[in-house]
Length: 549
Image (cartoon, rainbow, N blue to C red; front, side, top):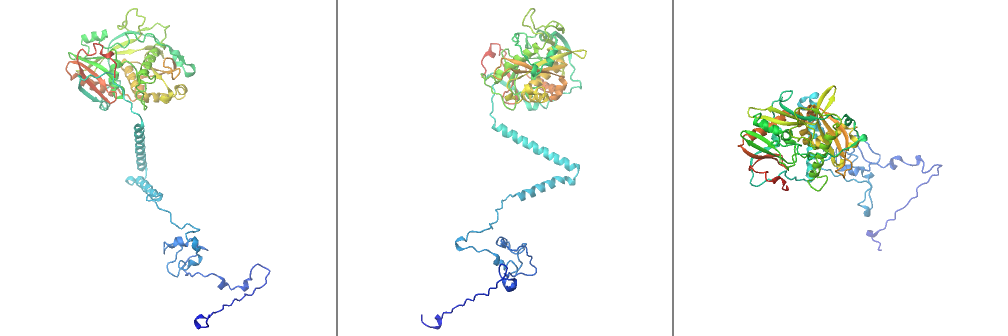
């Protein structure tokens, strides 16, 4: 190249440092200038040294001044700490040893939730400025409200996903029938009639029939000592549950003006417990010359017992299913009657209850030993109720003869009902009763009403189960329990004031109607009780034998 001043080449010299031989590794301490060897970072006297090497300075730098390790001016450690930073090569510019990106903040973070929860607790703790007993009561009240809301939500969600079962009516409603009265069952639960502490005292009009003695050996029956249930041959006897108009005693009392309303205990109990019923039922109401007669249809289903009527899981209405409503009703009715006859002592002479049974024929082999009480209750000047009540037996208890009302509960499949009687009836008797009260609230309430109306001292409940869940013809007796009707009524929340209040409400509505023939029908799919006006010859031409839809 030409030798011009602009193209002069300057040669840089390289001087080899002086190397001192020492016994240790590296140069000696005296050979190194400490001030020159120390990497210098500018700082002020007010700065605090928190790190020997600040690897996170880039993450903190964006917060600016005011953070714990940042400087407040340009001469601080934050301004001159670039000497500690790591600079990657160009091809690794996007790579970092430390993730310096801030974590995304959700709109409703945990911290915000904790603050709201703490504020809510503070508000609860200082309600009315009270931090003592008042605050505890308020917290307990709010917890109950929250629990109730949770239960309502769970019930709503369960019912929403559950299949709805539509039941058929107990009678085919003809289009020419007109509705003359309608009651909502919810309103019936609010009805009250003033009753004395000992109950509404009845007037005895007569006692008929005979009462067999109870076999005490059935009180000792357990699942390990179960007994086979014997089929009753006289179930279809014509004198069992005779309707009102076919009862000669009630007809005679009506002719003598002993009352204004006449019925059987089962009919009165069905009206009293109408608010608990789910399935449909019906009664014929005949009003003539100011007197009212309640009757059942000859070929109707009024006498059939229900099974799991009030259970949370509805029972299917299929006629061919052995676990359907029609089959279970017939099975339970037969088992109840068979149990009430089997537990009686056939070797003991029945106790004469009064006059001979007016409903049985002399020498009839199919007659049933039953005691009848005809009693009268006066509810008002217009309502005087005459009822035929039924008793099933007697028992010697503590030196006294007590009157019995004998009934039987039926278990068809423990997987459906949710309670296995064979394993729980002895160890968890209360749980078994509680389950039955939930699944058969209407049936147990009607039995209790009948026992109270008849003046029974003891209500005997038998627990009858299928020998096999798939067989509805063979049953065994697992246990027998005894209850006082008034105590059992309190246990199932059945009050006499409401019982008589419901009946009086129905009776008042019936008395307002003109003379004629009516049909009292419980809607099977709605909590409604309707009264239809029907022609005088209805149900007299075999109408009840027609198939129900």
